Image (cartoon, rainbow, N blue to C red; front, side):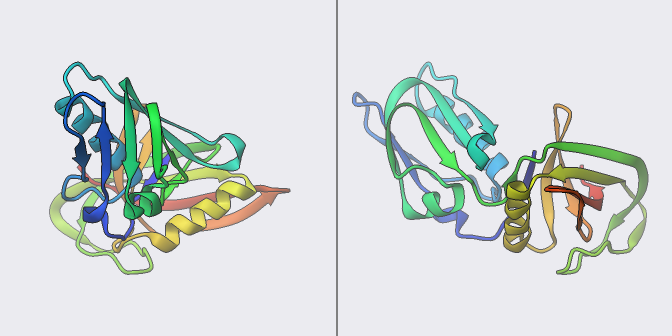
Length: 209
């Protein structure tokens, strides 16, 4: 799973939860949250801390050609999302029950597979160009660098291109490595067709602490 940090009015995102008993509460992302993965984590943590007895969770899938995130709570709520939440997160405008669907959140991609290669140490990147080129190093400070490859089908390729277009600068993303989410700075992303509707993408990344 790849969650690109993207531009947008994240501070304006609002999702209201009303359990019909307590006063309605409204979530706005914590400052610094600018991607779907971080937003999902932030949202469920907020639900747990706001409503007694909650233990919310989220899961992503790519069924039906779309990438979807399902937010699942323990209790039943009336969920109401403002226009910004609908635009950035693909959140349903309104829903009732224990689940809220985010359909095709901006910058979220679920490749068929992801492979990390050649993990090594090097200097921290000083800056990054708008095109995502890998910058120079600062002596004495080290981050891990790697080559990351992933496979797309045709539909997923379009999601990846949209994520690249929406990405903030420098281009960064959270990439799932087994069970660990790694925040990386992305180099130039090379996308090419390998066979039929199968596409291979790869890039150099700097893994930030």
